Image 1 (cartoon, rainbow, N blue to C red):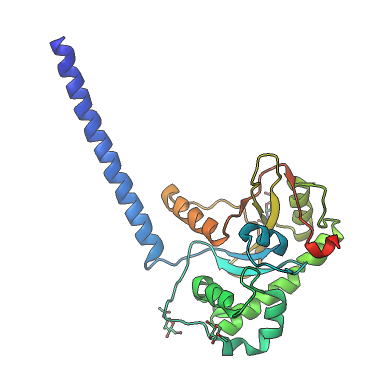
Image 2 (image 1 turned 90 degrees about the vertical axis):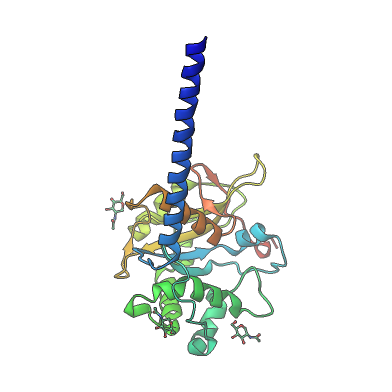
Amino acid sequence: MLMSKGFNTMQSKITHVFVLGSLCLTFYCLCTADKFYNRGNHEWTKLFMVQHWPPTVCKEVENDCRDPPDYWTIHGLWPDKAGECNRSWHFNLDEIKDLLPDMRHFWPDIIHPSPNRSQFWKHEWEKHGTCAAQLDVLNSQRKYFGKCLEFYKTLDLNSVLLKLGIEPSVSYYQLEDIKNALTSMYGVIPKIQCLPPEQEEDVQALGQIEFCFTKDLHLRNCTEPEVYSPFLQDALLTDEASMSHGLSVCEDGPVFYPPSEKMYH
Ligand SMILES: *[C@@H]1O[C@H](CO)[C@@H](O)[C@H](O)[C@H]1NC(C)=O
Ligand SMILES: *[C@@H]1O[C@H](CO)[C@@H](O)[C@H](O)[C@H]1NC(C)=O
Ligand SMILES: *[C@@H]1O[C@H](CO)[C@@H](O)[C@H](O)[C@H]1NC(C)=O
């Protein structure tokens, strides 16, 4: 009895030390990952050119999203692994005056269409543009927004989807079919994001398609593995998810590509 009690105490002490040690280690890792992510290190390796499907974006927020465009629009051009790289580099609408007609048409703020549409562009510039600006070809607001519009036109996603026979529909697609069709057209694997179903019997809705570019601005796969710490990866995935609101990578299986209200009528 006595021996066994002593042994148990010993064991529980060891467990305590171990748990405490693990906690400290976890805390230390979280802190350093946070430091690494938030301060100083703004290294990134690829750019996501992100386009979203307005009817799904509207479902996601359920606010005054009246009459959204019935074509894919730009969400942004995002370096991976970096955000808000220069907080003193403020958005200046004057620098992109000549782009405004295209900006309004291809890069509208779906969620807050009024009163000030440029808030969305300001957010994208300050969060992502200031990091993308590490590249000479993107080192001004004119270049950043201009290049993104250029990518949008070159990728020409709306026409490509039509050509592939992938149209908004009340019947469902299989994720694999959409993915394979896009991959065969573009030669690289995109990242496809969905709005998860609200109820079990619903089906995920196609929300966002992201194409990846190298720092030389060549298309690349979005899927290539990166080697970095799992802690950091977690922190980053969380941030990436929050950038795209309620969207997450689509799961294999059926996908709903929702028609806009306009298409019903
Ligand atoms: C941040 O942006 C400001 C304004 O463009 C610029 O003067 C400054 O050099 C930038 N800082 C860094 C670290 O790039
Ligand atoms: C809209 O927002 C931009 C960026 O924040 C600002 O420069 C501009 O003055 C605002 N325009 C209006 C009409 O409020
Ligand atoms: C993209 O991934 C596919 C399949 O894994 C591979 O065959 C292809 O070579 C990759 N393309 C590039 C540009 O890395």
